[in-house]
Length: 207
Image (cartoon, rainbow, N blue to C red; front, side, top):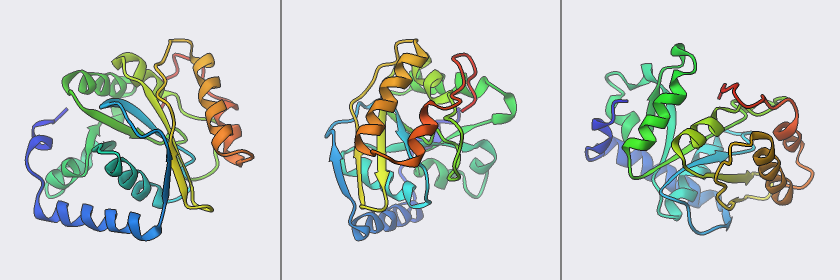
């Protein structure tokens, strides 16, 4: 991972863009509920992922909680002229063409940093899916960091952060606990079924 650029002061353009996104978060009037603490090293689940506004919400929510969120981005996007901007916005470059190695790369990135709150949309798309991708779980398990479920409901303009869950290695059992959380905060949401339906078995790390 090319982490040196991430430690430089952000550019003026990056600060302006982030400031605009945080203003949009406040302007939309989202209400943040749930936990008031996010571990400095964790995998944050962004679900359900149904809108491009999700990025604005999670940026604003983590900023409100004093956390600088990070996200995975295609390594090709970290080339000039976007290099500094992508790192400034919290991007972590991954190369999906190397297969499952990107999971190992992110595990190594966690071990290299003292603070890394990596936001992952386990559905992988805004469209309806039959199941969650499991790469987030293998990243958290390999790095020894907790999974923090987070949610957003654009219909009610509410969102929140759930309690941190340390992965036990029992994929099915841990997914059941995560599913129970989402069903409690978003009862009846059609995306809830995707947490349990056709979830890849442990070992199929296909985030």
